[in-house]
Image (tube, rainbow, N blue to C red):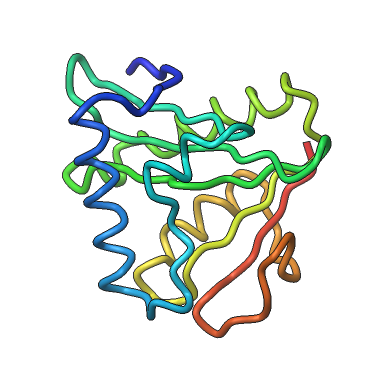
Length: 151
């Protein structure tokens, strides 16, 4: 698997992210949806990575700078047919290494509280993330869970 910084210009990436946003909309009420669209992911301070198996896009993840020492994990997604095959673990390991190299001391994330998101929460716990209070502009929301990890 090859993980690369992606400028979000390719149609395959756009389609992959649209599937992600559509799925999040189907699972989460609009007021609790925090998935970023392409324009938001292209803003300064956000780095986006795509994971390829050969020429096939199998996963993605982004890191959004919140302040000089704190970043947020965004847009973590694995192609559905590749779930539980190690793609997410490889991506998360890569992005956490990159975050350390960028000088961040902490990475936090928001994910869903529904059962659908249980595997994601388990993955984050496996990588040392702990549950925390809302951070940045987030507020308490029964549809959200917040996690953080020191680097």
